[in-house]
Length: 66
Ligand SMILES: [Zn+2]
Image (cartoon, rainbow, N blue to C red; front, side, top):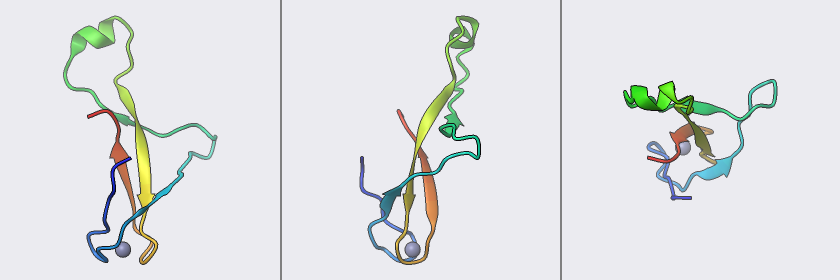
């Protein structure tokens, strides 16, 4: 994965895992207005990757596949 830096501390953020209470993976809505994809039943959500700042604890989520 790409390297991310905390906007406050400027340190490298570490990969972390965030899950919903039910244990399912989090996804981000990636609807780009393509109605065709929805008509054929393709998902418009995409996986997210999460990173955490070891200094201040900031957690950021990045949508995959863009
Ligand atoms: Zn920080």
